[in-house]
Length: 449
Image (cartoon, rainbow, N blue to C red; front, side):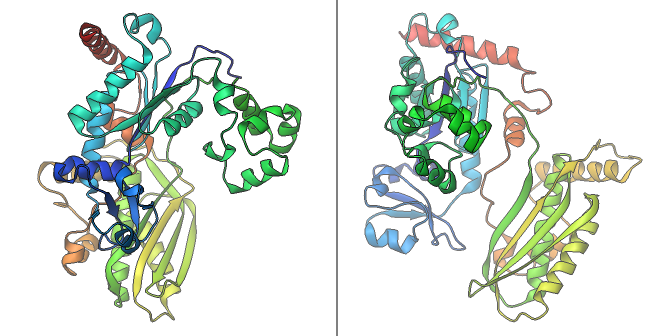
């Protein structure tokens, strides 16, 4: 159980990241209310809004037409996910220079371990100066505003960031309980409405209320999680930051078609194309699936769905697509409404040992070689230079499928780490290089002060 009070964990989060990216891409938007719209035409619902837009009551999940009604002079931007990925990479490249341990958790946020900085870096400066210099550098070099929180654990650091936005907040060691006392338990990640109601039944609406309850009561009601919550509320949960690379638990695709599609064979072609893309991603991560599900949403927002469980884990396109086609035809047999949206989900994943050698002896090895070669060709020449028959047929349907919009850039931690350090086999393989960069940044910072 964590008891070391010396842990100092920094949480860094991009402010209104997608909207901030749009402003970084077009500086003329600076100072104006900006929101990013999702949906098939980029005018569905708001998926991000900057602070200037939020002052008009514009929130994530709001219809874009309502946002325009509330703020007629605001700017609606269609998402540019490929650009967001590139900006995210630049931001994380800077962050990794400020700590030997960086744990990215999404496209715009991550944790840094600053535990030993007081002995190695902060001799001629303060934590606030160090973190604010980091924030200023991200702003200067990437054009993205970031907020940050420093505390004794990752959970508390994230709450500090939320309280600091826009800016930086440090919760000194020993002040954790005081900071949490009046804050709602709902602010903590992992406490959804059900747990919130259960805690409310005990009279605990704030962390201060939780701290006053007997720890044995929380342990009886919620198990080990209740014990941890009690320690957290009392300022006694000080977990170290660990970089753990875990396999994903599932992979999915949720796509609204460019237009309502009355041709079910065209919808099937898209479904098989998406399945091929997801299966290839799993093989690159050396995973295979046991279960899959398909949901079709029609233009009146009604839905039909079906699923399949394989006796053995599968990784071949022909097997997976064959099962999907059977599901598709079974659930669409008596339907007549145009298709609006197609959702695919693969889960119950298992490890797949592959080695991309050209003349592999097993199917897994040969598929890995094909995936590796196709990935290299698409990278060296152009996107989709190599594709399956279903993918080619989809591109020939119409302009909407010929130039599909980029997928939302949320990727598993394993993939993020691979992109940062070139490998996910040993996250600390390049620790020496990171420490050298850290020392360089430290010297530059001390010279400025």
